[in-house]
Image (cartoon, rainbow, N blue to C red):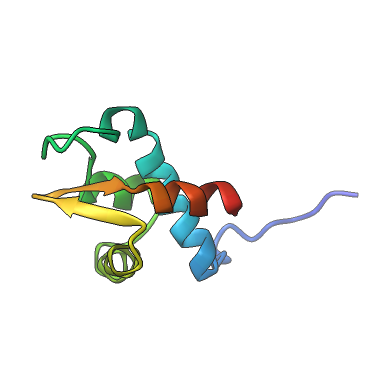
Length: 92
């Protein structure tokens, strides 16, 4: 049986799935982040938005929520995952 998929049908993600996608992008740079406070380490917002498949406006909301919860930090214009963020990523 062949399933026909409407390419215009939107697929919505839950808040937790979006958190996971953002943390997953940042975890790709975790080797550089541990023990390093260099502001050039981490990901810029544009990279997170593109890789996690978010819009610029909505990404600001999610990034702020992750900062407030302690799962990520912002250094200059870059975002880094924290140890709490890594624990959350492994748990989801």
